[in-house]
Each structure stands twice: as C-alpha cells, then as structure tokens.
Image (cartoon, rainbow, N blue to C red; front, side):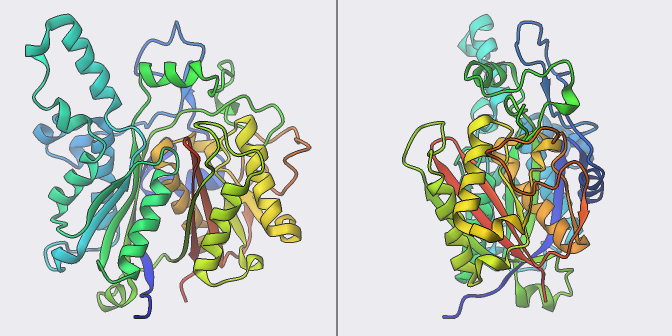
Length: 413
C-alpha cells in the first residue's frame, strides 16, 4: 500500500515567549528572550537562579477548575495546548471518526512538581495524607490520557519518553501511524513542567546549566564560544497531524507537510553525545532518505542547539559530516536561545518554529551569538531573523541516553 501523505492542520503553543502561535511566532521573529529569574521558589541556595518560565497561563481558561486541580502543571499545559490546536485547526471532534483519532505525546520527566510536593507531605504528615491523585497526576503518560478524555480521541494513545528527543520522536511516531493507515488524525507534540527545586538541583549538580545569573536574557547562547550551559524552559507544543485527504475534505488550513522521520541511538554514554556526532548524523540521514529527497534540498535546520559545550560542537560536526559543502549554504538556528530548553517538549515548539519559517519565509535567529567558536563555524542566523524561502525544514532533537530524533517538514503544494 502506498504511504499516505500527512499534513499539519492545527497548532497549539504554550511557551516562555508566548501563548498561542501568533504570540510565539512574533516573539521568535523579534528575538525575544523568555529567560528571567525563577519566581516559583526561592533560589538563594542554588548556583543557577534563572529559567524560562511560562507567564500569564491560567489553566481555568481551558480546563474546568476542579479538573485542573487534579492535574500536574505538565498535564495542564498539554490539555490546554491540545484544545488550542483543535480550535486552530477548526476540528470538530464530535463528527470525526473518533476510533481513528489518536494521541501521541512526548514528555521527558512527567509530574515532577507533584512528586516533590507529595514527598514533602509524606515526610511531614505521613502516608495517610498522600493525595489519592498523586499517581495519576505524576505518571508521564497521563497528559496523553487526559487529552484523549477531553477530546474523545479513541484511537492509538501513546507516550514517548526519550528525554529531550521525546516530542520529536512523538511527532515522528504519530506521522508513521497516519502514513501506515492506522489513524487519520493524531494530536501530537510534547509537554514539560520541570522547573522545580529538585530538577534544578539535579541538572545543576551535573554542571549542565548556565550560571549567567547576572544577565538572564543572554544566558542561553547556543554555538557562542562563551556558552556555559543550557537554561531550563517549560511549556507544551501540540500539532494536529492529519491524513491529506481528510484535511482537504473538511477544508482545513494546511500549514505544512510532514515528509521524513529518523531516529537513532549513540550507544555511547548516558549524558554525553558521541564524540564523532554519528548518531545525530545517521538520524538526519534517515529522515532525508525517508522523505525521498536530496541533502541539498534542506533549506533550514532548527538545531537542537542547547548552549552546552559538547552538544553545539558535536551537532555542528554531525551537520558538516552529512551535508558537506551544502552545510555552509543552509540557515541553521537554535530557538532555545529564546525559549530555553523545554526538555521533552522542545521538539514540538521547534517543529512549530520550522512551520513558521516555511509559511512566512522568515527564519528565526539564534540570539546572544556574539563570539564565534572555531568549532562552530556555520551560519547560525546570528541575532536577527532573516528572509529566506524555505521549502524543506529539518528539526533535530538529541536526548540523554543517546537518543536522536529528526523530522522534516515541507511546504505544502
């Protein structure tokens, strides 16, 4: 059976630089940083005092107040962004075939805030006071479960947990489910809400986080020689993926087409990327082969670009190794310079950034790029967005454990 074509027909974004696709896209184009001092808890004892928190989010704008209280923040973000995407896609979830309407969500950590709060309850008040909602608030799959309940999605329902590659893997897997004929419409993307004392302390102990506390807005500086670690972010990105004929039959707006997916493992180290960059290279190569295109067709790469010493250097190496001379012709940017690193949700809002680039012929910049690193010597669209026609955009996500995931989006025509 010939593979079916899969398109994106709705977008829901909750990010540190805006809620909704319009505010998010505008902030990307304007080079707005969402990084600031942490407001959720006292950071006096922490080496890192900054993060990219979501601002002005009220879950009751999207979810019944009682239900919202029984959800961890990561689930609130996911359900809200899903409802936003369904509305954006003008999708009537009551009239479609709900058995062929599924959910595939990426999440790296799950209900970290709930876990920490209930651990405190256990220590201070004893086991009898631990909430009966603790487990269904904390488990990583519950975002997907709540989305399906809220939107009557009775088809495939899965959660992908591959650290920082989670959302890109989720989108890729959802794409394949539709392509193979298992589902017609999938809600897919990622969600994360791990700006908590324990998570911050853990990443800080690994020396993975930026400590540029005196200038939060410039702390996330991918590919810059003076980068000193990533900045934690949070939020959710949701895409409505739909079989092309289904989208056309209901007159849906088509933002882009998903055409390629690659996923590999470094099989090297629990946190460090392989020093030859081959895992990331093979993931990109697999996605290009899956799309049936040439390497020279790629116009833009939204890089994983975390602002850590190893990632940025080795991702650059992987790109140069695969694309050879074409590497210099492509525009490459890391939107994490503005949003921070959304961990398991990162790939979803970065897929949305690719869709923006395709639709508006504008490539978002890598802000805070001031000092060239000799080992990072490609065109990272420094500091200011550029006008460029984009037919094919590639998005990379690379996670702890050696997980690599790549998707390719194409201008719909």
